[in-house]
Image (tube, rainbow, N blue to C red; front, side, top):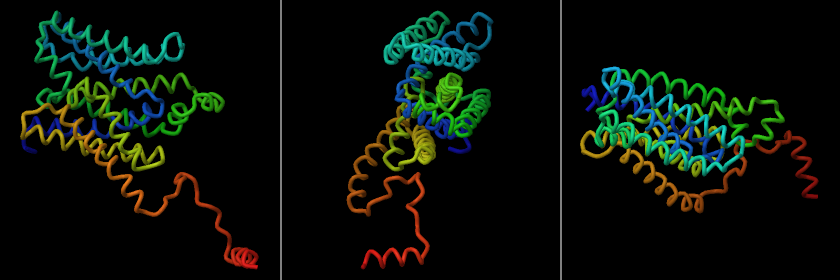
Length: 304
């Protein structure tokens, strides 16, 4: 399997996608925008179709402009929904619904005009390891590095904005810029994961590992780290399964992630019931420890 060039590129892409997608998903879960990635994925499909249309007009391979088209459309769509959400003229779920329907309808319509088939469409919707080209891999490496640098390097500021915008404003943080940055990074994550997981399932890879990690940890940083590890494991495992079985890689990866969630959700109450009581505030330093002399005096006073 590791000697196959297709699998080498696909496994490296899966490794990067599995590590980066849950990092961004942690912020989306914190902001209660778990479906944002799904909406961006639908809009990115229109970008893929536009890439096909432009490629056909220029006389080049239609697939060559699919990823750049998806990147542009996803970034524009993510910024649009952030603008709508910020102005408050319509609810967040209504804006997402418009993105869902408009994105999928525009993608199906345009890719038909560009000469694409339903088979081409399915590759983008559910992922295909055979579509990860060398150019796509280079783009995946660059975008994944950018996602990880922003997601981890600006963790304190992005957490503050995602957790409590009013507090972030009072602290003097550029809230609009940071919110826009989260939206752009989410869009880049969707396009990076498009080849491996597919546009319809990429949101699951951003959210489900975070849901698993939240059952195992209590701090934001540990949740992000644990979710990334889970993302890498399910992506690499799922992709390896598709090498031996002719099944969709995106669907396999998502089913594996949901299975991990189900197992952890079932086992965690049993383990917690038998184990000792844990620290309810692991992020805070432990209680103040008195020097030995003062502790002895205190004990004596209590005893007396």
